[in-house]
Length: 415
Image (cartoon, rainbow, N blue to C red; front, side, top):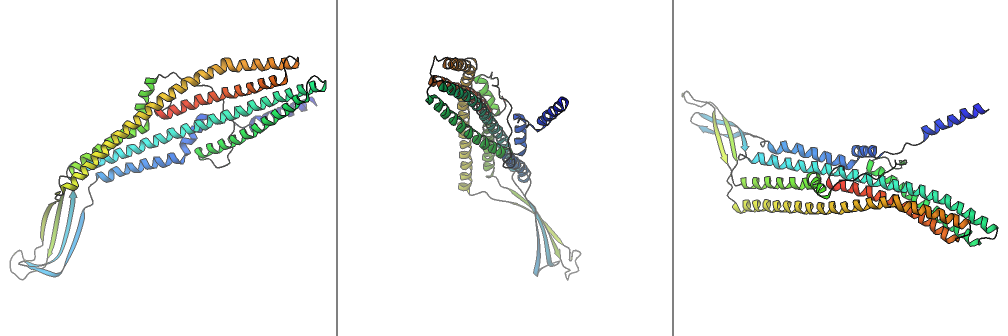
């Protein structure tokens, strides 16, 4: 019988190992998000499409073919003209096609930076939801532990009430606190489901997909100095790089507008079929051909001048946009740097001082109540402080990690 029990116990253990859900890993979630997020895919295709546009604008316009049929023949000395075939090609002024290509290549580079920025945004959002789920899971765990503690507290109060050493009010208060904790657990579980749905949306998972527990989150080391972060942001922040590229694009467009003062060329060739004449000349009935060179006349200087001024104004707007983004990025870097250093100190304070102290205070209050040295309210207060302190500790870790994730979004790369 004992052998059968051991075999059954081992079997249940093995089944439990295989059935137990594997905790979600942050790196795996990020990889899945970068692969499946539709917003990333949309911007990637916009980037690819903009790249194909470059070849289009760098190419010459389509040549023009013409055919003319003389309804009433034009008589010439060597015979009647019957049909005419023509071909022509417009050739922009030297430099125009190159500038158009550079301007559209810059436009494609801007889409590339938008694509990279979207990836960083998705990574940040995944980390935010992941850390929030971690906090909710910890809050549920801590609240359940506190519920167990409060249940023991309720039993102690009941025992003291039964021997007339504590009023019934202590038992009732314990019941009330237990009900509050149960209500809090309901709220936390609802928030867990909401966060799981948000993660599914980011990862493009089917609605209703359950997100298992997440791996533990430990405060990451942070050793960057403020000036180094400013340098990294100038080199890597995608919106800043896109604004810089936009300045280059506006410069190409301004130069292109100035080239419109110069004419474009059109080269052509016509071939005319000539019917047989009525002469005895050797060239009687010979076909004719002609070459053609044409130019447009850019003489409407008001229009051309307005076009150049438009591009100059757009260039100045791009420069101011870059400066505005640079100022905002610099502010956000400093703001998050100070938040991170503050949260880092808070996490350390909770870990080394506040949590151990509240645990000691609660244990002292428990012993004091059981020995009759303190009343029930003091014990209950110490239990509340312990719960709040433990939750605040995990909240500080989450705020610290989320601030680093946000800073990574601001500077444009992993830290």
